[in-house]
Amino acid sequence: MKNKKSLIPFIRFVPEILVFVLIFTAAVAAFNDIKQNAESEGLAITENSIKRAVITCYAQEGSYPQSIDYLKENYRLHISDEYIVTYSIFASNIMPDIRIMRKQVNN
Image 1 (tube, rainbow, N blue to C red):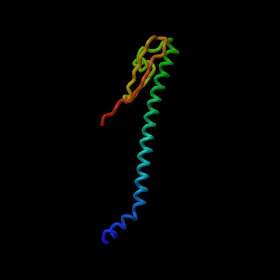
Image 2 (cartoon, helix red, strand yellow):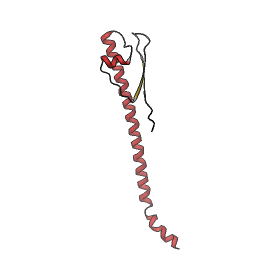
Image 3 (tube, helix red, strand yellow):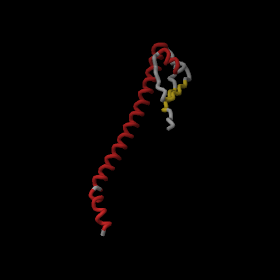
Image 4 (tube, rainbow, N blue to C red):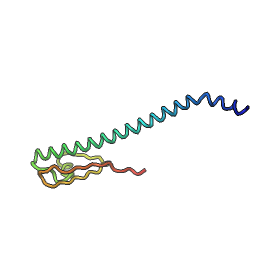
């Protein structure tokens, strides 16, 4: 009989505990979603910046730049250290293949 009486105070708090766990889980899920969206947006902004600089170079000089470094030096392009950019050019009159990836962070 003592066991039933000792559980009664705990049972009264079960709904509050469940609500707290539910709110906490929803907050963590929302935070992760916001983080993923921000990472995707940063990647898209970087890609658009590079493409805009490449096209500007082509419009002004009549050929696509030979490297990303040329864009950094002459067109004030800045790429964050958190990204890896591969830039492959086939010919000076064909749009280069530009690929951007986020560096893996080891914790």
